[in-house]
Length: 322
View 1 (cartoon, rainbow, N blue to C red):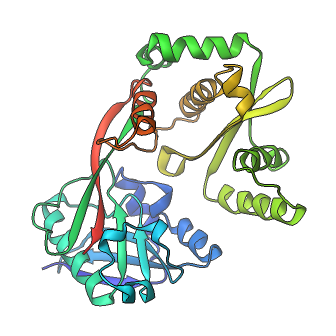
View 2: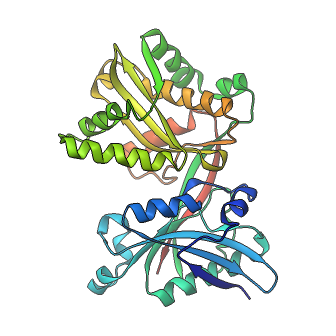
View 3: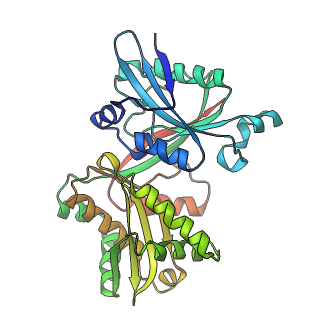
């Protein structure tokens, strides 16, 4: 029988087990709990175990600040749900023994119910078993992503990119004078200002400093990024995490100038991230997901764009506690 041990602190072997599982992402790391705290959320470290050993682990964040934007409204049965604590996780549980997958999800559902949480979470694309008999606890939303295997040779990875809408755009961007540099604390303000421009927001000095401070905090989690410029003017950027040698995009910005002039900065930026991943011996580049059942032309476009990079498709689920 699977039991759950909860704690607000990680045990000494938390990250070791995570990395050795080959399911490591920043969202399940000990360091990310510090980020939860920095953002005003309370983290819980959950260990799933039987009499023999730990079978899985899961880092969740809890937040009293609840909004309809953070979870599907269909799971809100009445107004009292707005007073509940929202619990969420990304890319978990991290399951070490897949034979126990069903029991682990059942134990998780029971735990969340007893806590009276409003909860949702994303499975790890590499670990999707365990959903056979969870109907009493969770509703499922299908989701998918493309993941690039960075252990392949560089030329092979380039050849896997769609020739017309991928490789050609990378060359076009280079030919049109787009330059790419890695984001540092000294130039992060360019990315922040570009993000604000995209959001049609005027940043105050204090707000800009807050965003720079956020960058300092996530840098400690292994975040990095690249920014693209034309004639020394920023026109695009991408941030990403790389904990556990698993690159995951976390922030994409693009200027109207880049779009209207067809500079294709996003294509060049992605290729630079692939090159960076190869040079730094990363294992995977996760393109951050898409709706496998697109509901709009925009979602169909996202699917096509991510597919063109030649990664392998992985289907997984988002779970909503009933």
